[in-house]
Image (cartoon, rainbow, N blue to C red; front, side, top):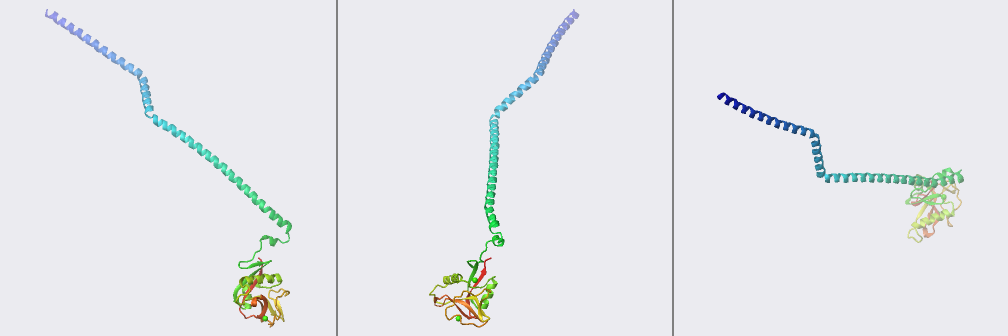
Amino acid sequence: MKGCMFQAVAAVIYLVMIVKLQATEHIENNTDTCLLKLKENAERVRSEVINELKAEMKEEFKDEFKQLEILKKELLLERARQRVMEEKVDVSYVGVQKLEAALSQCAMIATVPITAANTTTTTTTTTTTEKPKVCAAGFVKFEDHCYLLELDKTTWGTARSRCRGLGADLVSINTEAENEFLLEKIKEYFPPNSENSEYFWMGLLYAGSKYMWADGTDVGFTDFPSGEPNCMEDGRCKAFISTFRSAYEWEDARSTYDFFYICEKDMS
Ligand SMILES: [Ca+2]
Ligand SMILES: [Ca+2]
C-alpha cells in the first residue's frame, strides 16, 4: 500500500512539473515573439522617432528658419544693390571717359588755329611767335621798348652802370612820342607845380665835340629849350630831363651831379 501511495504522489509531482515547464515555455515563446516583432519594426520605429524629432526641431527652430530666410533675402538684396552700384560706376566711368575725350578734342580745336596762323602768316619770324615778349619786372612798356624810372640819385656814370647791369642802357629819347611818354611818367611822380625840382639822367653825352646817344643811336629829336645845351665839354657833359619850373625840358650839365635816371631796354 505504501508503495502505491508513493507512486501516486510521484505522479502528481511529475504532472505539476510538466504543467510548470509548459507554462515557462509558453512565457519564453511569448517573449521571443515580442522581441522578433520589435526587431522587425526597429527600422520603422527608428524612422518614426527621427521624424518626430525632426518635427519637434522644426517647430523649435521655426523662428530661426524664418530669420535665415530673411537673411538670405537680405543677402540677395545686398548683392543686387552691389551689382547696380558697379553698373552705375561703370556708367559713370564711361561718362568721365567721354568727357575727357571731349575735352581733349576742345584742346585740339583750341591749338589748331593758332599753329595754323603761325605757319601761314608769319613763316619768316618764327622767333617772335614762339613766346610773347614782355618787359621785365619794374619796367614799363612803351611801343616795343621797356623803361625804368629809377628814383635813386647817383652820378651819370654810376647810373649807366646800373642800367647796363639790368641788361639796359641809359635811355635814348629818339622821338617826340617817346619823350612825351617819359615826361608823362615823370609827371606821375612829380606833378607840375611840385615844390622841388627833380632831374633824370638820360643817355645823351658830349663826346667828339657833339652830343651822341650812349646806346649808339643817332641824335635826331631833341627837346632843349633856348640856351641849352651849354655845357659842351668832351667826356664831361651829359643831358638830363628837368622838372624845373614845371618845364619838363632837357638840360645839360657835368656828369658828377647826383640825379635820378631812366633806363631803356628792348622787350624780351
Ligand atoms: Ca629810345
Ligand atoms: Ca645846361
